[in-house]
Structure formats: structure tokens, C-alpha cells
Image (cartoon, rainbow, N blue to C red):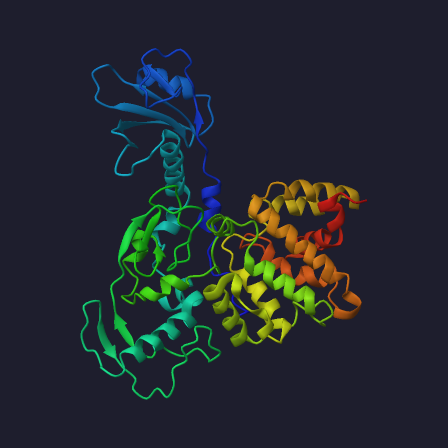
Length: 453
């Protein structure tokens, strides 16, 4: 489990980041402005006049107008891909052009620009978005295999005394009758095994507007846009693109919704949901490692036992903050679980936007210039990423201070963590700059975060 690579595909997320942002072209003295529009409304205005107003504006610039007083609709005019486009715009309590409804014009324009940008720049990905998707290797199964197996056993045990051949919610296809003992502990240490029985239960997918950043659990691609980005199963919580949901097998496990946990969830989305500034997985693992692992030789380099790491991951998903780490005597299991949590973040702590700034910073000539440039690069991180990265770098700095005993210098630690903490484009295979940058963060931690000389 510790050796799982990042299961999420970053391409669509990175393309969305490049979409133009809305820029409102204002009109200060419009006399007949409707109450549901702001200064972006320019009154009655023809096609040519609107085009001239936007001609020298950047992509994303927009205005709202009315072609003539007899029209029963308004017109949204914006600049995209260096051309001016016009759309019929309606309002009936919500703003809409086609099927999607929006509470504000800004949301409509932002979502529309993203949609147009994705169609222009990512059509090759979107056309093939689920053609190679494999349910067995999907993020959903990868993250939840042990939970699905355990819940399957419990479900099978509950029906063992009265074999079921037909149920309203599903049809039993196969039962294995020679189970000797069922482990009802949701954090078992047994090896993964095929599902003990298979049954069909249809997913209850509904169109959903997701808060924060979310990824499809079948094809592993980003759910782009601001509203109605995909669908979610009301019973088990499976998240997918609408197109991908058509290919999800009928294997809904409703009890899994209660155990979806924290691994593989976008950091900002998770912390907002928990009203927290730091993931409890990171905090609890770091505290445990600093309590009894600072002197452990090869900490973070030596792998823990895969089945124990999986069991601890499952315990975090089930028990949350109450998870007891003291029962795991091997400190490398806790270190491996922390690395796994960080590796499964859809957007790494050092984001794609900050990556080039980090690389540029480490190439400055002197240490003092590096510290300044690194500090400026980190200031561009989202708050959740900034706080969690600071916490981790301070922890790694303390680990490195015991390098004489644990053999994990700042360079060794950065070599281990650079592939996990730094978002790098797929084309980059040599992480020399990323390792140097992370090493500098660890070595100059007091100067970067506290301004010490």
C-alpha cells in the first residue's frame, strides 16, 4: 500500500487553471438597469458596438446588454480565444443560457469560460475520458478495497443463516459457504482477498454540485467547472463524471458511505468540511513520530509492513481523531501511513502553480536570495497547503537535526519526499531541482518561516 503512486490524473485540473477569469466591463450611467444585474449591464446596445467595446480587452472580459427593447431576453457578450461571442441570456430567479442555472452572473461567466476553455484545450482528453477506465484499478477500489471486502464479509455473515437469492435492492450471484470466522473489526490485519460474494445493486447517481476540488473515482480525472460538475451516488457516495457513471458496475455498497474517510480528498475541501487548519492524520502521525521515532534509523526511508499501513489507514477513516497509534509498535508503519496520505492528495502540498516559482527560487545565486525567493514562492500557496507544508517542513527540520543517529539528513529527506510533496508535470522525470528546493526548505526552515538570520 505504501508504494501506491498518486492515483489522480492532474491534466484536466492544470488545464482548468489556465482558463481566462471573468473581467466585468462596467457602465456607470445606465438608467434602466434591471435589479438582477450590476454595472456589467450596458442597456440597449447593438452587436457591433459591443464588439468594439471588447475588441482590446483581455480574454474573459464581458458585458450584458439588450439588443433592442422588444427582445424577451438579454445578451451576454464576452471575449474568448481572442474573439467576441454573443449568447442569449435569461433570468427567472436564476441566471441561465441553457440548462445550467446560476445564482450570480459571475458564476455563470466563470463556469462558461471554463467549459469553453476545456472544450478548446482538453477535447482530446474529454473524448477518451473513460475509454481506458478500469473499475478494478480505479481510485474507488484502490482506496476502498479493504473496506469493501470487510463490509462484504459482514453482509455475507448476516445472510449466512438464510441464503438470499433475490432482494429488492440486488440479486445475489454467488455465495461462498466455508467461511470459518468473520472478523467484524473494521480495521483487520488479514490479507486482501477477492470479494467473498458478488451481488448487484444499482448506484443511485444524481447530478451534484461539488464544493472544492473533486476527482472522478472511476477514470481518476478532475471534475471541472463550478456547478453540476458530475454525479454522486446517494447511497454509497461514489463520485464520477456523468459519462463515466454509465460504465460503473452495479456494485453499490451503501455502508461504505459512512467510511469514506480522509485519504485521497482534496486538502482544502477536507479542512473546510472539518473546520480545521491541519489534517488530523498529519498531526497525529507527526506527534507520534517525534515522540518515539526521531532516533529511528532510516525513518521515512525504511518501509513499514503494507498490511499494517493499510490497517492504520482504515482506522483513520473509521475512527478519525480517536485513532490509537500506540498499538502500532513499528514506527515505520506510522511514517509510511503519513507518506501515503500525502501521496494520495489530488493536489500535492506544493501545487502546480507554485512549482515553477520554486524551481526558479532554488536557482538564485546566494543562500539569502534563495531564502527570500522561496518565501515569496510559498506565499502563493493556498492557505491550507501553506499551513500543512509549514508543519511538515518544521517536522522534517527536527528529523534532520538527529541525522547523526537516524541517518536522515535534509538531503536524504528531500529525496524521499520531493516526489510526494512537489507537484511536477508528467514530462519531468529528473527531480534534481525539486530535491534541492525541498532540501533548502528543510535546512533554512527557521529563516524561511520565522525570519531568523
